[in-house]
Structure formats: C-alpha cells, structure tokens
Image (cartoon, each protein chain N blue to C red):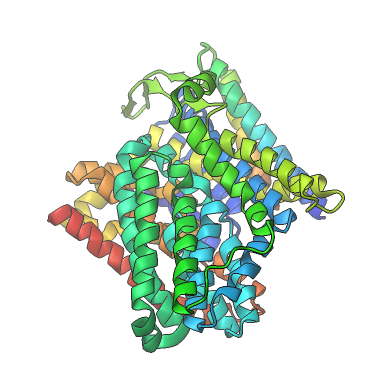
Length: 506
Length: 53
C-alpha cells in the first residue's frame, strides 16, 4: 500500500501528460499537490518537514533556473542577430554528398545547437534546412531528432546535468565521468544511425569512417571538457563545436576542395557569442584569482535535522550553494551582454531587438520555470518525508539483481512522458540513487544510465515530436514521425542498457 | 488571452518564489501558523496553474 501511495505523485504526472495531454507545468502542479497531500495524510509530514523541503527545493530550482534563463537569453541574442541562420546557411555549401549533408547538419550542427541552446532548437532550425536541400519532410525531422539526443544532458549549457546534481545532491566530479562516458559512446553509435536514416545501409557503409571520426571527436571532447576539466556547462557545446570543425575538414577533404577561408568576417562574428562563452567559462572557472574573486558572494542555507510523525529522519545539512557571480548562469549572462554588444556594433540587429529578445525569452522560459518549480518541489517533498525511500525499497524488493537493466528504461520513460531530460532527472534521479544504494550498485553508473537514456529518449517525446513535425510541414502526421523515430530511439536505449550491464557486472 | 496567461504564470512564479524564501524564517520560529500560511500560499499558486494552465 505504501508503495502505491508513494508512487502516486509520479503516476499523476504521467497520466496527466500522456492521458490528458497536459503541459509539464500543469501536470507538475498536479504531481506537487498530490505529493503534498500524500506526504501529509499518509507519511506523517509535519509543517517543519514540509517547510524545509520547500527551502531545499527552492535552492535546487534556482540553481537550474539560473542556467535555463540565461542559456535561452544567449540563444536569443544570437538568433535575433541572425547568427544561427548564417552558420546554418554556410554548412550545406561544403559538400554535395547528401549523406554527408545529413551528418553535417542533422547530426553535428544539431548537436552544436543542442549544446548551445537546446529547448527544441536543434530540430526547429535544422529540419527546414534539410527540407531545403531536398530531404523528405519525414527524414528532415527524424535525422536531427536522432542526431542531437546524445548531446542533451550536457547540452542547453548544462541545465539537464545541473538538474541531475540538484536532484541527487552529488557534485559534478562524482557524476560527470560516468555520464560523459555513456553519452560519448552514444555519440559514436549516433553517426551510423543518422547515416542509415539518411541513406539506408549503403549510407552507413559509405559514411562509416567519417561518422566514426566525428563521433569519436565529439565524444572525447565532451568527456575531456565535462569530466576532465570540470566544465560540464560547455561539455556538449565544446563537443559540438569540435565536431563542426572536424566535419567541415572532412567534407572539404572528400570533395578535394581547397581549404577556403570565409570571404568576409561574418561567420566569425556569427560564432562570437559562443566564442565569448568558451573564453569566459575558461577565464572564470580555470583562472584561480578570477575564480576566487567572483566565487565569494553565495547563497546557502543550513537545514536542521527533520523527523516525520512516522519517524523518518532526514539528516541536517547545507542546501546547494549558489555562487552568484561565478555560477554557470552568471557566465551565460556575461556572454549574453558581451555578445549583444558585438552584434550591435556589427549592425546585425533591427530596431527594437533588445525588447524582442527579452520578451521572447520571458515567454519561452516562464512555462518551463513553473514545471521545474513544481517537479523539484514534488521530488523534494517526497524525499524529505520518506516517500522516495518507500518507493526505492519497493522497487529494490521486486526487481533486485535485474535493476541495472531496468534503470535506463526508467530514465527513458521519464523523458518520453515529460518531454525533457531535465524533468526526468528531477523526477527519477533521487529514486534511482536510493534504489542503487539499497541494492549496492555504483550510484554514478546508475545515474549515468538514468540521464543518458533520458537524453536519447527525450527526442521521441510526443511534445518534442509535435514541435519538430510542425517546422518541417508535417503537422498532423506526428504519428508517422514517431513510428520512424522509435526504432532508432529504442536501439539507443538498448545500447545504454548494455553499457550499464557491462559497467556494473564486468 | 495570451498576455493574461503570461501574467497568471508570472504571478504564480513570483508567489512560489516569495513564499518559499519566506519559509526559512518561518520554519525556524516556534509557531506553526506562519509556516502553514506560506505552504497554503504555495499550494494556491500551484492550484492556479493546475486549474488555468
């Protein structure tokens, strides 16, 4: 009975999104209110346990929202200047090989866009480009959907990974290596899948070598940056950028084209927003005097030990520390302001650009902000009042030794239902962590399975499919897109299940 | 219609942030009523989103 009650908030969210087709913010509100009721009536929550749960949830939410808001702001600053469009238009001119075009635009450029922005942008930008190159609308949606999934966790300038850390209380150096390894290996298999989607098995045979080279480059760079240097906020972005450089070189080499420099500086200016981001990230996080100067002012609270009426204890501790001026969100803000100045000096903005940037940013992020507040609130209320523990005990008892095979599918289910790697991490990461602890499995490996599977599955979420289909003129035919996409997505999740099994049992 | 929805969302967002922050001093005090009142405010804001989207 306690297992059913403990799982009720999650069931409510999934039923609301899948059955009633509610958005994440509305379904999140339903899940949160359910958690509040169940915790109070069935798990002995007190005003104190609920209050401290909300304070912890607030800090975890702000940690993620700081990135989401400013990441989208940076994307809008570049997009309003036409920078994204300029980069996209330059790429098809590099090669006439359609398979290579699919790899370049539908995989590498889509991954770069996911790293830099996310929020449905990869498919929305690349699908029309592929249609313009002569790909069928179905292929134009499916190719970039498959192509950018591996970059989701460390993409959006780290917001999904930040949610993973927030939900589990674990630091980046504990989580990043396993997650980056799983996702890097996923990048390796993504290239051949994209080649297959573009040109069947002949495409796979013809493009296997460049796909392997590009996948290896992107996976290794993401791993090096996120796990090696600890710069997880630019992990997928750096991987995507390295992939762009390597694939441009490969495309020219295959065409035997002389290395051409851009006729004007416009492509360099277009990239300046992201160049500034890389520079500022390295400056603020890797140069000790700058890091310590900006890292001083921080927000953090002490939470005392709490006990529910049912006797469930949560130990005393500190909330997540938010360093106001060296946080990933702060770096994004500095990059946005500087990039705005650069594009304005270059004369790339139409009048009223600043107002449009701020308005569209607000409109876009407010809904996802509400869903984050609701789902994080729900998850922490569940944790603080013993509901997550009850759920973990129930799953551990029923599934036992097979849990490593189940863990990726839980993450994938969460992302498929909520449309988001971030939301899946918020809802399921704490549960996955607790279950792994109870069963004695390595927590970073199970959490890597959670986030990697959620990343690749999020692209097939109905909400994402609807957005992608509409940009390629396939509105009303989302079922066709989902059917075409599903076999690739299931293959990718099965691959992650295999990686999890190898990591746990070898 | 769209502007109204945006304002509702912004109001709910602001209420949740304010009430959650105010819970810290409230939780540390001996009386329960400030905590319950703030929790009720958060639930109300979430209820607004639940009912109106």
